Image (spheres, helix red, strand yellow):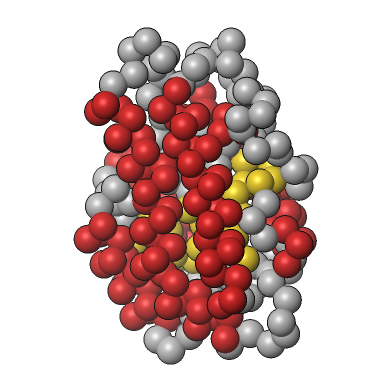
Length: 231
């Protein structure tokens, strides 16, 4: 983004916990980062987070909602269970649906307060962090890992992004499914081999893509370099 945002709200399951240490350090250096308790598998937590963000913003809206929470369970089709399918789907697909519902009033407010008719991330947008693993047409690294529940949840998230793009377009809200790359994070590295993309490269790429999005990309499935990924 050309100018830094006035506020960044970082959702975190356990803001005071050990695993949030890096986030706490970042927030202590940058007073515009506000850490908000959030568990996207819990509708009550989502509503509370939206209320807290709304309170902090006062009368202004929220320009950008990034649904980044995601989980994976390394199971093949033979050992998938009802429990893991539901657990993964709840966080990866239902969470972004409920987040969109809860934050819609704040996104609408941002869109209404923004000049011009075109869609953009500086006006109002929902970015769902999807995955190439959700592409049905191009079964990304199937030989390397079936991760069936993860693939199904991301394919469903892509459909949700499309639905949101159609439902929220009239409110001036852009919606996109974005693949961040196979990134060197805790989850990305748990597959047993080092992922090809660094966090910095992925983030820089995504920021560039976000700043270039317009009306013609709403409902699209893109990667961190701006390429269209097949459904």
